[in-house]
Length: 196
Image 1 (cartoon, rainbow, N blue to C red):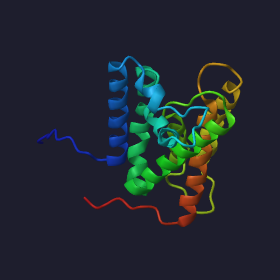
Image 2 (cartoon, rainbow, N blue to C red; image 1 turned 90 degrees about the vertical axis):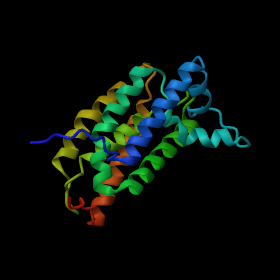
Image 3 (spheres, rainbow, N blue to C red; image 1 turned 90 degrees about the horizontal axis):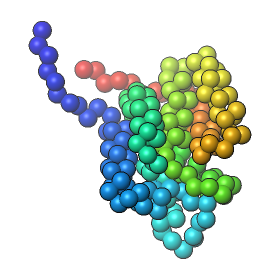
């Protein structure tokens, strides 16, 4: 048996998302930690006359406070994301990521007095969406109920502690993933894997 080691760009949206986030973090480190808080964080004060304020409503998913934050988010995204990209298609997954980023950015700006940085909302969107990977229309998968109990219960409990983590983004990302899961399941036309 012959083994070939050829890297394949198998999930372009997920891999590009990860690559850009790591490049942003590297640039942030080189600039002494000034880049991410300025351009890659949804800030509580919104300047309607600044294009950067609108950009940050989505770009906050690319900024991370440190390497541990970045790696913990993208280890999950790189694990679950390619499966979702294969099932739903690159374009659909990109739209889901952008909707989740924009929604969490807007809600954080409207209702919280702290900044929002990181891809945690995307992680929770993917976790909940992933639990719908093989369900039929009109069904509620048991995997969804178990994931809901394990992850979201912990997030609700943690939301009352001042730990510098936006549990709101986790909860709202999970809610968006749930909506996408039910909506995509209701379509009854999951993307089929291509024959090899």
